[in-house]
Image (cartoon, rainbow, N blue to C red; front, side, top):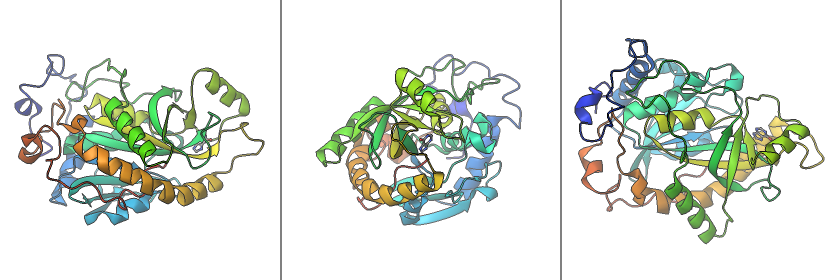
Length: 348
Ligand code: HPA
């Protein structure tokens, strides 16, 4: 699929009237986000014959998982047109396109954050690129502070919803209807089916998988104990500095989302000790391979056969003939992901 294909030709039966409305002229200029994402997508797809339908965002200390992809093509972010460069410690800053078992995937070894000085749009740009590549589902992982008492260090938590306290939104500015609606619905931002399957599978495996609400803050300073008490009062179970812009852009682009937090520390004031980023990183490194193996097995059994991966009504990416042949994204003959492969599904 060419990422530059006309969006309308591909989607005559699936695109809602709102989506085919004339795009805002300022957002559809040759240098608009849609076009820039298309250029990056074309560049990436020109380097590999793999056509990923799932993206994984692997952050601090967790990128190593993508080193295990088979038939991997690695592309440093610096080489990809318009791609933002990660400056955070523990972020390799490259894209890895390959296979987990027989499943084509694209993994981000590191992400960029608002606290690095990037805009919300820039943070979400890789998701726009994935959308233009034909990606249908994204697994967003992060490191988070546990606000809820039982969310202790090392626990994996499936994100059920988020509270955006970052003060920004990647959809600010002219809306490009080729991506999605001006006022995009966020009622089920975190795919219910993915959540249920991941929790069920995690519990079946005895790793005590829970769900929680993620509060996205700007950072880079950690929260004060008073802020954590405030977050607790408004219904947050976890706190972190990432993920929210990517989720908003993914949903706006018709991509389904699974969000998983690895609790690297009790949030400020929950325990009587200060927070230290190097410790957080170290914990991510130590815990994630342990927990990630379990999670890998959980996701390997659930995601490839999940009907939510059925091609969505994304207006600009045509599913491959193979993918659209069945009711799921992956033909049932595909073997599930080997459990050793998604060995790190949680990072900031
Ligand atoms: N707060 C914010 N972000 C985080 C934390 C935290 O306690 N831990 C890991 N990322």
